[in-house]
Length: 317
Image (cartoon, rainbow, N blue to C red; front, top):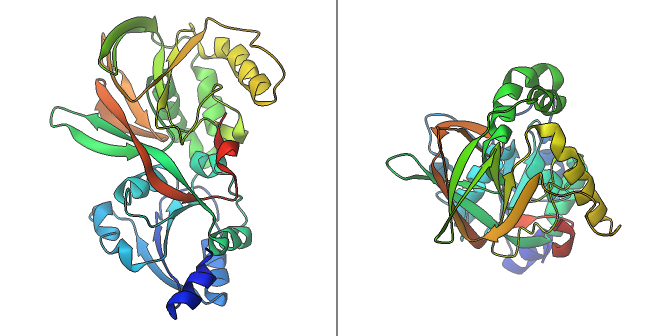
């Protein structure tokens, strides 16, 4: 049911809550144009701004009073809002106002504000999984939609921070090029209750499967199957993973069996604990955090409905 039909059924205008992160992104997100388009269609808008002094849960305390939620910011903003809105039935639009906007890319959302408004009005949503990560001695819990990781991918995000303002999304590419000889260590995992160990440069726990430019991280990742895909990075450096990226693209295009193997290993899990012989930096949904390993990630099946023009199967790698 689209928002306008819902408005006619209820005899009231649809109400959309927009939570905006003013610190996200490096350019003009055209959010005012998006909001104007919605108002022209009879939608009531309430805007709230993220701030360090206000817990994000407080910004959505009355979410049930709204027809839809819009998270305007980067991936960290969107995933935090999704976690705060989990299991509350109000759908979320991941408005791409950040640098990379991987969640929006995975959901096949455009950057054009008018088209985004049309997608919201059309009202097509898909129920997808979220991840929950537990870190620190006090067991603090946070949400993530895309992926969590420790090791080389977190180091890449750390090194990209100072480059974002000048290079935008290319900062991630330049940062990856610096990871020629990333630190290698012994990782100790507990996967659905079973211990295992491996030597490598990092671990990624993936819910969505597309990196920048919708390149698949690896094959067989689905955000709606109730499971993570855990990726063990065994390669000695980031560049040795390029053949595996080629394999993922070939699999997405149905071009045959993998041509390369050995640089990474993947498997599925509902819950995984990651520790390392020495503390490794931790990231989730593109945000580097003060916490380090160990961490525990668990899947939250069907916890959020996202607006998307795509069919559910189109979101799988």
